[in-house]
Length: 234
Image (tube, rainbow, N blue to C red; front, side):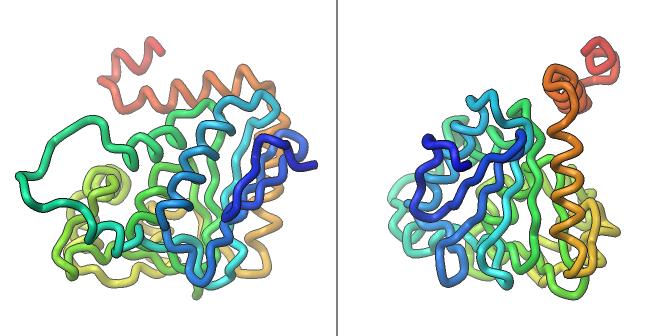
């Protein structure tokens, strides 16, 4: 049954046996509008606080679009009258980081296109799965005169390596599922007929493990970004 706390207009949430299934539904392309951004932030907070959830799976109601870029009209409303401010208090960064560091497993089932801020969000997830011949990934910010400000310039080099990250960001062309799997963006690129069953089996398997072991194992893996001696202590 759906947990009462998960009450959103653009995300359908069902919690079953330790897995929260979050289905994005903001037609026509799951654009990250301000209302959807607020709901994605709330979802992270509520999943993190829900002791009944050990795994979050994010997917889309639209088979062709997983999650699009942040609403450009909203970006055009940002002030450019002063110098850009370097601040640790970036709400989009904080939202993405919550999905990365929450002591639950976060999986993205990307069956269609994901780009811009949508790609930056799922790059913060623990695991990403795509569809052969269908999943497409891009960062289209540079061609329109901005940069990937939601974390793409930092997460992609760590995930793909510097050269490949620059190819994605500066080239701004679609990255297909086969290449994304080979480069390490996707854990696996699967046939369309297989992805749902694969992700469900993995999510339910993870959710069936002892919660404390799951929590501490993810914390320890996150510590791999520290110097080795510190990570080993963790």
